[in-house]
Length: 219
Image (cartoon, rainbow, N blue to C red; front, side, top):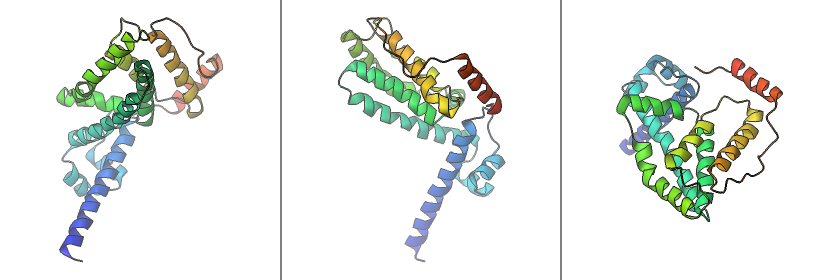
């Protein structure tokens, strides 16, 4: 094997091992608040402990790398918002997009909290602040978004819905869809309501949710 081939093989191995480590870390923080030990993370990712330490000197570096990767997932929401025909449609795309990303990556809320503890990190809010404020102002100028809310009101509501990840898979879409509909109706300037998706959430549905939480606990 030539020197160039060896270098290429090493780059591939570095990338592969980093991917394995970050994937294992995301799986862990999707259900646990407590950090894994480096030994546990090495075991979960299928890499040697020495390899893990070469890629990441400690858990804090894993948190930073994984947080940066998952925050990048929100770029697709900006793209979806940008192609909407009206600012209000952009608000709808923003809310549904945030919920979708959080459902796909339930580790994000925990990692956000960990980043604040590590760095008082503001990269997520700073990167979006001006664009979201402009979107909200435009939707209010259209007369479709109530005038007494700001971008933080909109995103906070979306994050609260999306962060509820411990739902039975066969019920999650209906329950979340109805909550999104309720939030959007609350944001409408005309106070109007639209039919909520899915059927009403009955007491039996709640019991199934509670049972699922008992059988699938998170830390």
